[in-house]
Length: 83
Length: 162
Image 1 (cartoon, each protein chain N blue to C red):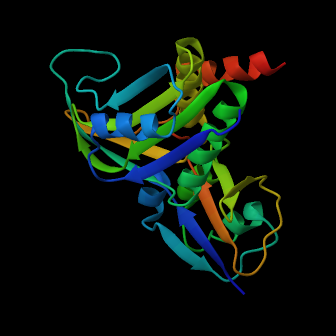
Image 2: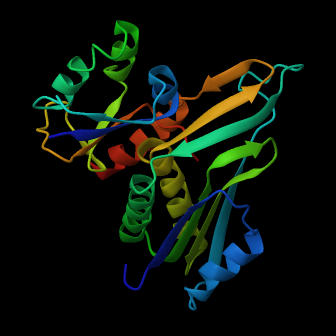
């Protein structure tokens, strides 16, 4: 049981990873971030769960309490700046 | 809108405006107008102070999701405005100052709908599509976020919905 976690832009720089696999992922993205506390500092975790960050599961924007299942792709998206 | 033929391309490669123009025109044989927009990498920071320059930007995106969302934005524009075809190219990777970032071509029967659709697409793209720019220059490296004026431009369309 695991999910694929993707980080973008400054979050990828802060975590030092664009992609990690997480076994103990919890029930939703909120719990997932909580479960990353052994891997990342509080400062990094706060950046991931900042109110400006959008969560996507399987490339669909979702709420932070959306349920997760085995094999999901969970992405943390900082504010966009394309165009 | 019937027969709208929209396409999106996200690429590291440089694009050729005349080819983009021909591409959208070929999809819109009854068009009376083609509105085009090209976004470029600026050389000055937003406060426009002299003596500090941006050298290049790094553009990243969420591959897959960015294509889907851009296509969705074009299709929303086709539903909302009387346009025949829309073609969007968005570059990613390392782009030097002065380089082209975005090409948008909107073909329509009349210019007013084309201009409006082009604005709509760019406002939605800025607010909804997962792209990120990092400016690199005299002030070091900095990831950019969504600007307030872009948020306001987007909010204006939402207001019009009510």
